[in-house]
Amino acid sequence: MALSPFHLAFPVHDLEAARTFYGGLLGCPEGRSSDEWVDFNFHGHQIVAHLAPELCGESATNAVDGKGVPVRHFGLVMDMEAWKQLADRLTGTVDFLIEPYIRFKGEPGEQATMFFSDPSGNAIEIKAFADIGRLFAT
Image (tube, rainbow, N blue to C red; front, side, top):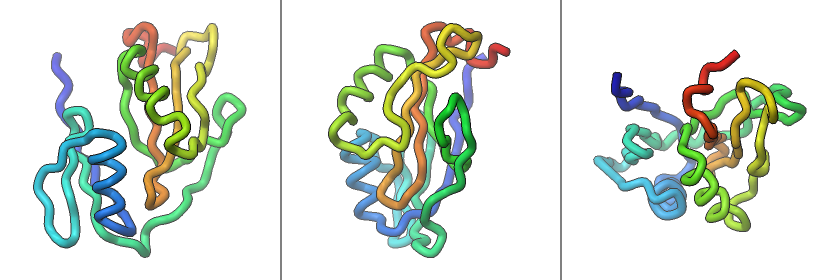
């Protein structure tokens, strides 16, 4: 069964900063927009940055694998090679909340992961599995 694209709307403090980050740095093509919001194609998914500076800021964290994972975050599951390429491209360009590493090593949920924030403080996780069939492994 093919996956349906998801839709996610989130607050940003500045639409031009969002365009630079999502469109420029992450390479997400821009879709429709207005003076209040802008759509991006996030690897086939529709994300929408809405101008709402009063809602931007840091989020609480929970401990996962000994690291402070932002509770409020969104992201992608990529194939391992694409993940490695993105991690290499982002290293030295973004301030990672959690540096790229392998989480749950040797366990059923072993995965590559990294966390970083957009300019408005929205946390993003990009992860990958050597075997995508292990995505929901317990």
